[in-house]
Amino acid sequence: METAKIKCPNCGKFNRVAAAAEGTPRCGNCHEPLPWIVAAGDDDFTEVTEKSSVPVLVDLWATWCRPCLMVSPALEQLATERAGRLKLVKVDVDAAPRTAERLVVRAVPTLLVLDRGEARARQAGAAPIPELRRWLDQALSDRADKGVTA
Image: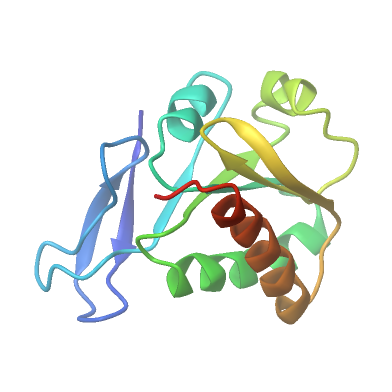
């Protein structure tokens, strides 16, 4: 399983962040929450998503998809805004065909919000950041309404 190199939005130091871990990542320098942005594939998707203590935003994308490449920075911004409360998992559907099939991906990008492996929200296609923020906030508030806490 790979680790990601994440720049702390608070102090600017780079930190290695495990794709799957207990709790949520914090900066080794300033101890502030870090954006949890990782990649997953067929071999580690289940471990990376289902064992997360926070909701997971899954970005199912493809390298050849222009809308996917356009929405990626917006998703990273949302993950940064919600550092410590959300995990962004990026899945290249061409490199992870079993995962794409299991999640019934018919178009890219497809976005999912998972809570302990259970799908809470799904959206196909790219959207502007305000719309993505509303969609994500709704999915996360639905989680809170059900009495689930991170």
